[in-house]
Length: 287
Ligand code: GLY
Image (cartoon, rainbow, N blue to C red; front, side, top):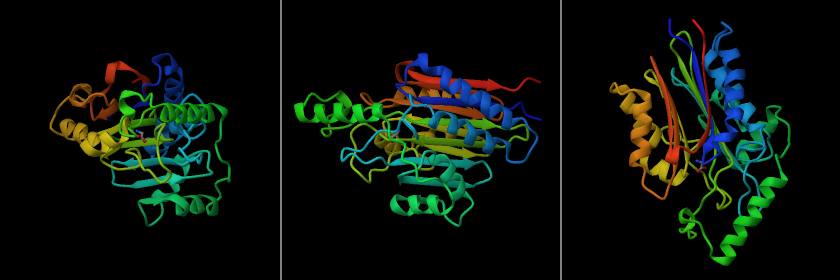
């Protein structure tokens, strides 16, 4: 029997003072993780992600960033250690993309994107409810202003570039030794309509298998390039402690790009972020 654990984050760069959000997500998730029902780890990371998607402080669901054209598209994924994956990319007009990822998981597909993902969600009974917020509108205005003035942040130079990533995610290990991971995001601050980041991509923004579960947050294109979650997972599979596995990836992640990671293995868990900046939570079940 393994001791259940759940970890959650509110995004690399999300102020550590906002860690009450991920911690509350862990509290909600732990109830599902320990209720003795099937799919405990999966249900735990879904419900933890919903808490964070509903928290306007974090860039996912309610609070998701706008695209440069003023549209709002989001990415999300769920994966389990028995090989189930459900993912949506550039989905619109839903408040909780993670719930759509859960529906995709039970479909014949692994990923749906764009208009197809949105239609699938509404057809399956998810409300047509765009998570538009004033805060995100202001972030877009500020991004457009930086573009116009050329006063770009170091990571925006490819738009030069991009910034203001932020994502939410959770990993869980259940008492039966199974794992699950969830991840949901509104993307970065400067992005074209149609852009897909690391978050909904298995191996890049998330990884889950018999050795554990990993969730990444940060600069999406760089996380994809490095398959960062897969690298952390492989280190864990080779016997490295998840804390060391996360720290190693953070240490080699090329500046000015930033990354945050949470991970659970069979016996342990860990989390790390560039400059240690990431709202985060963790909760272990009592013996
Ligand atoms: N890591 C979030 C994104 O780049 O979309």
